[in-house]
Amino acid sequence: MRLRLNTLLAIVAILMPTASTAQGLSIPAEENRDQVRDGVIRLYGACGPQNALRQVADAWERSNDLKVKITCGPEPSWSKQAQLDADIIWGTSEQSMTAFLQSFPGFPSKDVAPVYLRPAIIAVKAGNPRRIQRFEDLLQPGIRIVVTEGSGIANTSGTGVWEDIAGRLGRLEDVKRFRSNIVDFSTGSGASFKAFQRLNADAWITWPEWVVDNPKILQGITISSDRSIWRDLSIAVSTSADPQASSFLHFLVSSEAQELMRSAGYVR
Image (cartoon, rainbow, N blue to C red):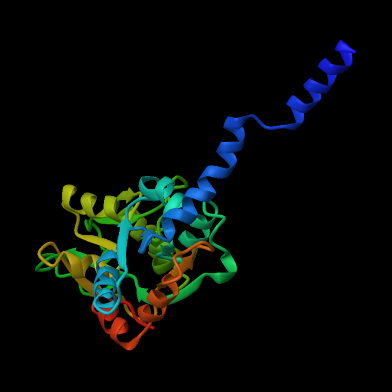
C-alpha cells in the first residue's frame, strides 16, 4: 500500500507544475492586462519619429482624458518593459517591424498597419561646408561618410539603405566608391548621429526627422528620385491594448496629424 501511495504521489508531482512554475506562466499575461488598461496608452519603438509622434499625441490628449506615453531607443533598452505593458509598437521600416514581432507574440503581424513613408536623405554639417549637392558628390575621394547598419546584431531601419541607394542604377563602381568613403558602420541611428559628430564626418545617410530635430548640427540634402529609397512607419497594436488605443490610431492618420507628421518628413 505504501509503495502504491508513493508511486501515486510521484506521478502527481510530475504532472502538476510547482507553484513557482505556474506563477511564471500566468503572472506576465495577467500583469499585462492590468497595466495596459490603466488609462495610459504606451508606445514603444526606435528613435527617430518620437518627436513627431509626441506632437500628435499632445494634440490628441487635448480632447481625450487618456495620456500617451512614448518610449524610444534601441530595442534592448525597452523590450522587457514593452512585453509587459505596450499598447502600440511602431516600426521604422518593414524589416525592423518584422524583427520586433519576433519578441512580441501579442502583436499579430496580420494587423500591422503601414501609416507613413519618408525618404532617405543625405545629412551634412549645418552650413554644408563641403558643398555637397547630390549623391554623386559622395563618390568623390576624401568624403567621409557615416552609414547606419544593424551589422547582424541590431534592429535598425537603416540596414542596407546606403547599398540600395549606391547600387540603384546598377553600377558596381558606385557601390565600390561609396563604400571606400565610409568611416563608420554604426549600429542604429542614435549611434550614427554620435559618430557623425565624433568623427567629424562630411555626410550621413539617414532620415529627415534627424535633420528636423537637430537643425544646429545637421542640414538635409535631398536624394534624386532615380536613387531615392523610402521606408515606412508602421504600427502594431497589442491584442490586450487599452480600448482607446484604436481612437489614437485613427487620429494618427487624420488630416491634423498628417500636417504634424509632414513637418518631420513623413507623408501618406
